[in-house]
Image 1 (cartoon, rainbow, N blue to C red):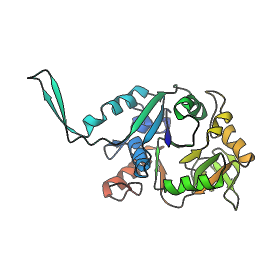
Image 2: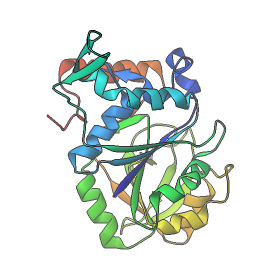
Image 3: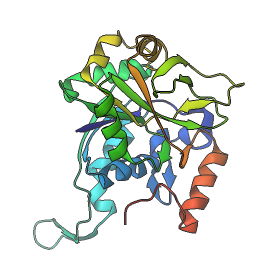
Length: 258
């Protein structure tokens, strides 16, 4: 099953670093937060990724092109034909497709642009700037059992994310984007979609979190997987520092891999 990562925004709220690199490439513990998210999915056996890039997308491509150089010892032998020898290669078992989905394209438009790489199958999607210790295997099982078009992971936080009205049977009755007064379940990403989602996406101006999710909710096709564990986005420098402190302490809840 493919995992789509939304990694195309400019990240203006953490401009201290995103001025120089895409937000998903900002490092936690010496590795991009995008790598951390991919490691979470890989732990559960999901190793095929489609990255929706945009802002400074060349930097994401360059990083993955040289990934094995970052994780291995290298010998450059200029004495016999300029050979390069890679020792103890430690790269992940990943297949990564990086797509330039445009500089100003909205989230739904980015997803629409990678439809041809997904095909006619169930897929997962999350944002490239937040980590979580959600059990992805349980999330996928929940999605398969309810049989609806979409599942999103919800958490309880006082944050400026999409506001959800969740019924007793975990169906999402209403979806409303960002409101500072909310202290309700929010959309934490870590979504699962059936290919029918593409019929809700029009063009580059489509914001996934607005009309598409709102329509799905009104049609009873959007379900919530409630997560009661750790989730943290990286919108500000303070949030980045919090994630760094957790990583340095050896107590990062999202680090479920060895």
